[in-house]
Image 1 (cartoon, rainbow over the protein chains, first blue to last red):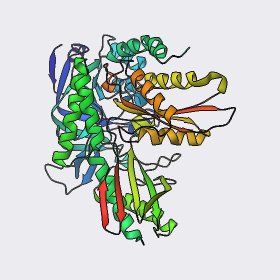
Image 2 (image 1 turned 180 degrees about the vertical axis):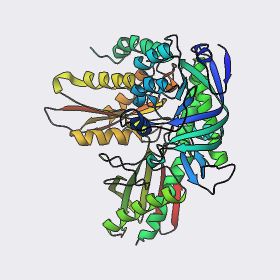
Image 3 (image 1 turned 135 degrees about the horizontal axis):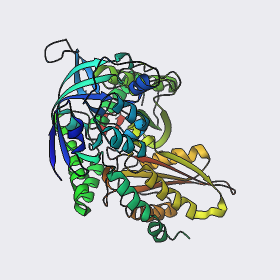
Amino acid sequence: MAHHVLTPPISEAQVRALRINDTVTLEGALFGIRDANQIALFDKGRTTRFDLHGAATLHTAPNVKKVPVSTTHPTGYASVCVGTTTSARMERFTRPLLELGARIIVGKGGLAKGSLDAFAELGGAYLAIIGGTAALETTWIEAIEDVDLDDLHPESIWKFRVKGFGPLLVAMDSHRGSLYDAVNRASQARRAQTLARLGVK
Amino acid sequence: MKVEPRAVEEVARELYVRALKVLPPDIKEGFGRLVAAETDATAKQVLGTMVTNIRVAEDTGTMLCQDTGIPIYNVFIGRGVQIEGPELKEAIRRGCERATREHPLRSSVVHPITRVNEQTSCGPGIPPIHIDFSDERDELRIEMVPKGSGSENNSWLRMAIPAEGIDAIKTFVVDCVLEAGGKTCPPTIVGVGVGGTSDLCVALAKRAATRPLGSTCADAEGAKLERQLTEAVNMLGVGPQGLGGDSTSFAVHVEVAATHITMNPVAVNMQCHSARRASASITPAGVEYGF
């Protein structure tokens, strides 16, 4: 169970070194992606000016406020509260996102088999953050460096600069390891015993 | 007691922001119980991070979770309270919109077909404003629940039949908890509606999911079912965030209504660990905020 500090761009070798139960801290650029912006990119043919090769991405749509443009707020946006949303809704976007070059998805609640296959074939990993702990997560965000597709606000594509973002738990790796699969199998195995305890015949 | 719409608007604005930042004491105590009983090392760490987040939110005035949710207002009109109904509803809507613009909060509300976000947290039928009546004299009570989508997206209704009996209800709840896995941000409060019509059954489940921890179903059979199901779902090992452990749910809450001789409906609605709610009591003495 190693700890890794990763600063994008992240190489295939770096992401393949990650194993489930390892922990990761991210530094530097982190892209906020979401339902609407991935529907725009992968269903509606829109493009982003961001280069996602080696990128770390986060399933999020933040609370922001408009502020005067300055060196600390180059986009005119300041973070109010940045947290992480449920990843499962965006399951079918994992493969096309990795095909754009992304290596890391940070999310909550896990992804399914299609994503696990994509991580194995293209070189990627899923890092679990603790959902619902956005106050803490916001303290790891240094600045909103850039924003694209802002007509979809708040589901724009956000480029955050982060410092000490983590520790995050490697929950799905490029070797077909998935903590969610393991827990789901164990929970399903306890179903019969649980129903018996409830007196279900 | 005559209540001015302007006072209601102010309360509706304040409640949304309060609910997003301070977790009710019963939920904090619930965390204390889970942390003390949890045996899985990863789950203990996950719960520890959640408890830290509650403290950071209070210390920094940051929202607990980025999901501002669907804003829900439950209004309880006491005896002797005078206010025009349409103005009451409009005042709540204005307060909700002002909270969103003035704080500012992320508007999480879009038109269901165009998906256009008006950036107001409002839209057709939203915020839901549920009006009820209470026996309290000269009190207008408003409860606010920002209902997060991670938990709301995991909602179910099953129109079981009498021949399937209580076993259908128990099995359905267990299977919903398994299907939800980590998606609902466990540990959850599992709200179960039993009986009624299809729409009432779902409303009961929501009421159950947003009840304070430690409260029990007023119906004795419902209360018994709560105890059985709370123990059962925590045998499944889903754990906090679906990463394994004992702490799958703070509690299972049940609400019941009578139903038709041919019907046996059951609904499940879940509340995530950020089980946020706030309330205000408007009386002749002024406004008192609570949970």
